[in-house]
Image 1 (cartoon, chains in turn blue, red):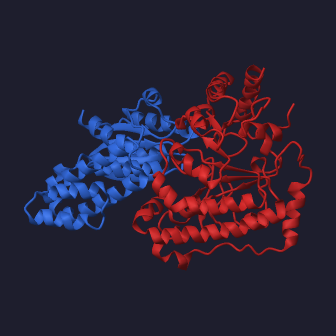
Image 2: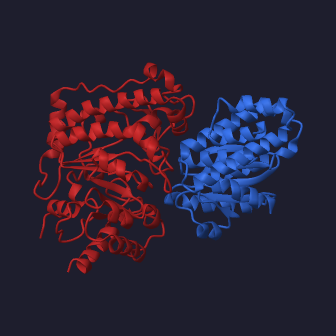
Image 3: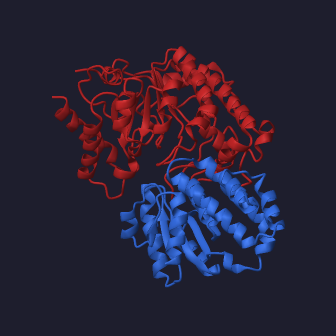
Length: 210
Length: 339
């Protein structure tokens, strides 16, 4: 098996201690950094798909993302000059009045693993915080808003409304969280809805490319 | 007409209930307490609880909890500064279990305040417990670190879980000595809306034996019913729930396909819930919306091994009127289905 394929396989099974060495070996063998990164992104797609299908669980996804992050650390010096590897910046946060962070963190990891640069605002974020982050960060292509409570569904709507009314453009909005549905996402004018972290990464790539 | 207590026992034992058990009615033994269950004791009362809009506080395990004014409940704070366990391999140096050493007079005060006046013919003496073992672990270290540590440092995680379990067993002894509970209503959330946090194998490896020990102790001390709150998808964990001795899984959300679970496991465990907060406990709720969901739950799940209930872990709802509206609709379904 080629080293680059090994990198992918070891990311999928979350070998955090093995992946950095394999990435270095792949580089030493002459693989291009961008291709190695793509192999890891492909690996994380497999992870996301398996999670969406219920074949693996949150710890497996977390260690895979951690393994990829360790590999990216090795790749970083080789990628720095090549901005084209990024799909853009994604601003993510849980909306005002909601302190849930587990789902948001998973989505952040998966979208990050798909090739976005993440700006994670954290939890309980008012609409103006999202707007400020869109203004203050370069190349924002995606805004991801999470709500885990029925009580914060109105805050999700308020956030999407405020972002739209701000006049800022050039990005798509994706929403998610346990009480959120495709119907609700459509009603509040979001560009996409994702039911889980694996699907979020795929939707993110698709809507930004559209 | 059966008492609330008899009716619940008939329901979970596959007997002849004369109506649906209406949500928490049989556990509602301490009306002035949160959720209507026995909640106060010297150990729990000594642990600081944040108040809404107040400053963050440290509970008796050292976990910082905050309750901002604009959110419906308190949460542990897990930034790097506030995590109790920053390195799981060093947990013994930082985790200090709360003292259990309180004068009997303090327990007596709690007994007097909460046990007197319970209609034991009608209601179970029910003690509320939270957090559970898994929750205590991730409160101490944060969810992400916790879930990764199951893979990266399994031995240290087992040691920590064992430490927490041993403490819970000592606490359980005090609870049994003083309250002689008939029902333990214990919280521990094990998943999200769509999946369990852990795979069934991992869940069994780390949590099955500790829970068997803990719930087994309660059983040995005469507790009749172990009711476990877990408002998540956990259909894949039901065999483990049965093995650890859970009689009623409260909080089973609709994504579990409760009617299938009843067909598969009815008689070994009962299911309480299937009326999701997410579907009915909304700003725009109506009696008709509630009626629709209650009807679906009752018709799909039937009369045995099922207790229709809001999925949250205690009597009440976020929006005023929702809990009572559900109760009204359950009574209507009882009249219709138990003719």
